[in-house]
Image (tube, rainbow, N blue to C red):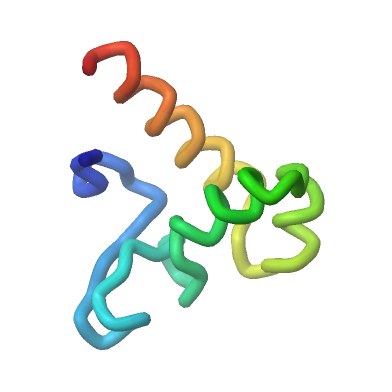
Length: 72
């Protein structure tokens, strides 16, 4: 399991989305990005559907997840 505390573009609060990791400044769960990509969506489509998330945030989350694979 990833330690999302090291990823600066996400946050977690019990008051937001039941404590799920969300993109900082939004209520969009990080999990939503991965679910949409798994279902065949592109990053551009995800950003269109969730306009509160920036491209920089989405790419940072993907890079963070990718880097964790290199150290696993």
